[in-house]
Image 1 (cartoon, one colour):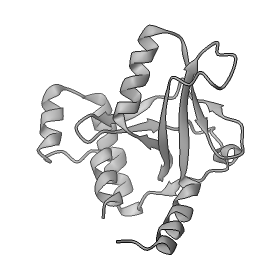
Image 2: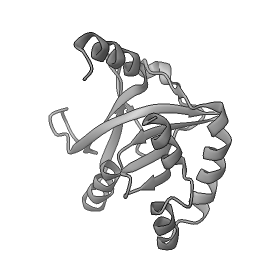
Image 3: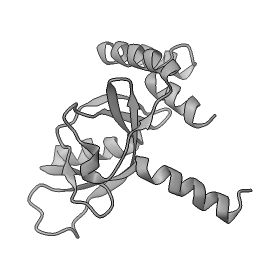
Image 4: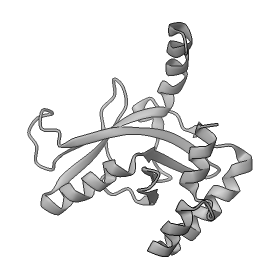
Length: 164
């Protein structure tokens, strides 16, 4: 079991790479009407940058979008939130419960006082190549194959990297 000092040290090392997603009705007049939310992890992969979150968070966002106009806000600490409602999902997997969101090239993370965790260079080419293939073809057959471990997706690469 991790002692308190080690735990606090680890948390402080991760904080620059973690943000918050908040979803509000589009015409909300105050910050008390949050509909859902989640955490994101900022990660960089070569020229690509991503937000990584749980797939169930975006499943809920899609459900809310079908019911009303919403706004998705990306928040840091002690900084104004940034609307990311139009950012594209790069890839997702409900079995692993992970979703990667493509960060536009003109996004400046300093505005949120956040940094992108550097994805290991040796895995960058695999992640980018597999992510592109996954976007081109996302079928039930592919999802079943991913679950058996036969296809290496960006999410699985990230999951294995972060879990050691």
